[in-house]
Image (cartoon, rainbow, N blue to C red):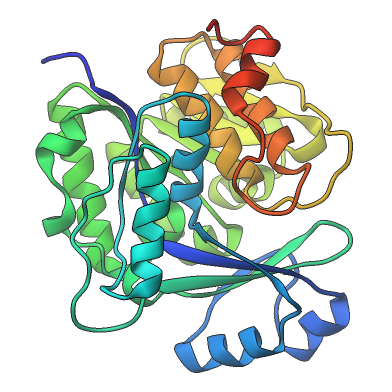
Length: 334
């Protein structure tokens, strides 16, 4: 098999993010769980959007954010996701192409509009998300081009999309394609409530298909049914070749099946503004490093560096060149 031409392909929800500042009273008034993500219908999306403070609208979605950060690192990225044949869908496609990301998934011509995520950010930097999936949940096996998957060192799946049955079949097809080509599959768990709802299905899917698992501490505790970090590590080794657990200001822990865990210190930004996309950025740095065969410590530090840049400002896409920051930190050579 030829060397991969892409570092990472993301498979996830193609969503336009709408970010605005809010207070706890706003969340309570609209029954929005603080710090989490819930799915809503189109009517409720309009109601919340109309009530939100002025904000910014940018192409988003967890896996797409990771691929955008990968591009900022100088990585070669691709994306598989579903938008509608509408104005927001064209904006989403244009944004990825402008970053140099390969994105050729055919748009949905009948059915719901392009999805959007309404993100209300409280003064403590917590982001509370209400998501209308729209077209995003319609990724199907037909959208998985085997040649495209074979071209990437790692194919990276978004846990949010796992809940859609047709998309889950697309995940399996892509994983089987990657494995047959000698490539790797990675999965981010995305949200603890998602893990709780799909617990058995996640365990089965990870055990059968996933090489690299990413989770924050709460997601890992939910998946492995313990809050003891040593037990999490023990169960992670039994399930997956490599598990990355992010722990906010405590840094992260990389748990390989063979060998000792590798602790990665967090990098504190000059100021904490918005945690939206921190996990997505960490995934980008880690997966870039793994795709380029960096050792675990170096790959993990890239993840920490990318996350620190993201949480220093409003929004889930980098404002500074992550590659320039990584070169300055001695993690990447120009």
